[in-house]
Image (cartoon, rainbow, N blue to C red; front, top):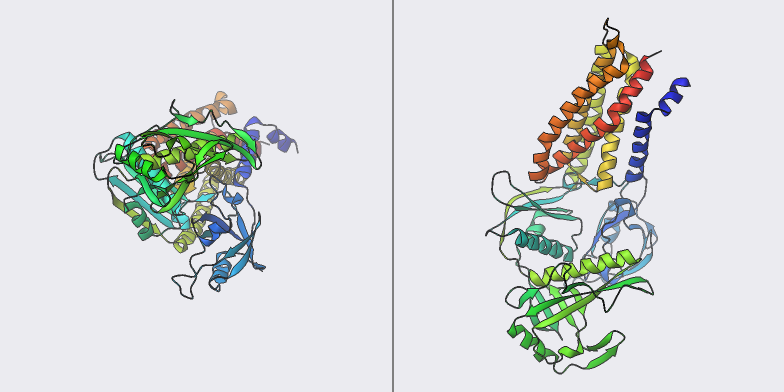
Length: 530
């Protein structure tokens, strides 16, 4: 009991325990049944019935379908088996962990088949550990602009692609800029889970058409032909609307936003022709035209706004676009308003891509292979831990060191997974390779610590535990910074697999050096000394 009490009061061990507790909070393991809704396709039967894509939600907090017409849904197989038996114009009750929906199916091309109801589902996550494409299936595409573009133009392209893919219901995606080690300039990495290569290619390679309509007639389109200028960012001509400040409404909070745009003379005249006969109506926020202006991206409506009565029949080139964002609280409403404003600014500025993109690399992984990868990775990790621990025990001939070895190895893996869950990093094959690399580096450090502690020397100062650990940690820190310097270029320049490997390796060695290695030294001293 004395040793246990001593360990539980040791600062290094306390730090390890605190990090393990935080890891459990971040991962949140559970045994939920049902299927989780990853995305909702716009204008689908599910969208009409009230389903909506949840953004920036932890995996375990995704809305789960529990029953379909009182039939329990345990997994994806149950879900698709039930959906496959449905008929056109059939109404079903969809019970989730949050509410009850009534969904009516639609006929596909006037046949006996039904249209896709519009829900992209996965088996209910059992933790907050996010799986990358290699583990859950999907497509990874690396794009290169055909023409040379500036950094600002590349940012616009990235925002345009995100908006376009979100419109099509592909929410579990990542669109990022990456640098090339070969000097090819900046590239764009697109990763989408649950989408085929053909589906992704058709969305990316399409030109991307923006259109503003009044009474189902085109007022103006996106791009430089119709819009000469869009005020972007938080400037004097863009931001939260001072005339419609954030305020509480019935369902929460609402914040208004505005930004100015400059139309071409032709577009301004077209808008004037469409609004000259429109009726003026009075609303609490001011006088507006009865006809609204609707924004479409690739024939999909993305927003609809009121038109000020002062613009009726007037070919005004400088106009103000306004809108609002809602949320449960002030901060959420403010963030949503700014996000909606940026989305509209992006659509108006880059309604069509400034340059064509070419696919230079494309990878597709099936979900079946992803499950096999997970099983094989778990098996590899278990075998590696057993083999390494066995070799160390045989070499030092002390069975006592088995406890700190296994404790530290398992804790290190758990902490890496917890940190990945906390920062929202998707684990893929490269990340698993990084975990194994971290374990290998950790084993080297544990050997250094064990060897220093068990070394038999005649000099008295060599028997001092603190001096031994100080010398061992000098070696460990030198090896840590060497590995860190080697991983930073891969993290900065890497695309896809390289970046995942670098990030996981850096996380692993950092947690090891500053959390698990010091705890191992304390555990080793406790189990060896009598």
